[in-house]
Length: 169
Image (cartoon, rainbow, N blue to C red; front, side, top):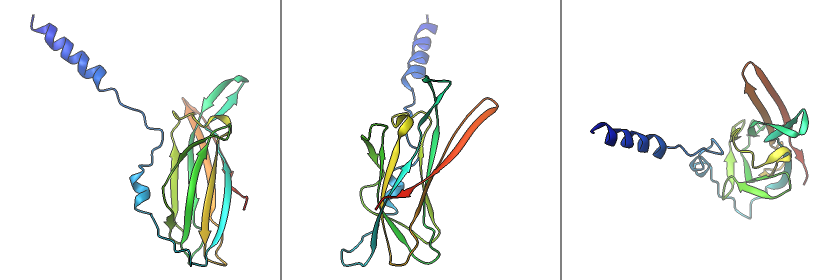
């Protein structure tokens, strides 16, 4: 008789502790450590960049897809100047906004890199997902570099490729 209550408690523990899957490995609290105050009077130059990424790719036909992990790098290529990223917005295949990664501008110190990771289980972007980045730099400072590495491994096979952002403004 004592085994039945123990059995039910064990079942409750097993099924009640189901872990919620994350869609991004970057904790939003990490962005708050990078928040920057930019004064309107600052003579910073504005830019906007577009980055294509792939949460999924087609395989064999349009009916079979493979999920990918996307690693997005936000890179300051200046050796001397801090840059500011105003927006990192993620869109799906249809151009619908999925999420913004921070609520106010962040800074990147000289030669610093920040990352956004979109986990393999997050397929909300689909096969044609993309980012828009808005940024500001001091005059004569190189523009930031935004690039992505998408990969997937299954068994002994792996797939990996990269994309680079294109400045659109």
